[in-house]
Image (cartoon, rainbow, N blue to C red):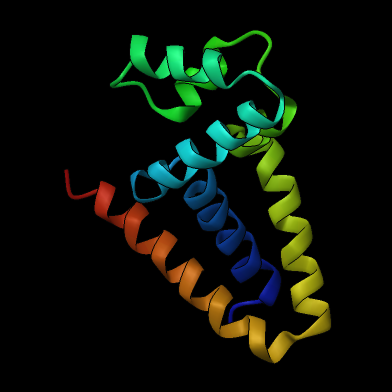
Length: 121
């Protein structure tokens, strides 16, 4: 049996990638980051960045901005988001292990499938 810590580590990798970089969540990141910029009173700046760089990812846009709101950076920084996601995983594993286990298994298997698929190229 694979130790829960290893499963959780691979699940943390997958969930961090999903939150910060996957194409499937790009639109959600753009919306969330746009709301963060608006909350900071910088919505015109975000709109200008989107207009000037329409093909850039949300991460690219935030990384281009030296004055990006910290919360926006959190949504695109794997080091930053990974810490908080890992904390949530530890809490989930301790508080509700039976509910968390299938989620962790699914995320870990998804990560393994994606990493193995890279070997096909």
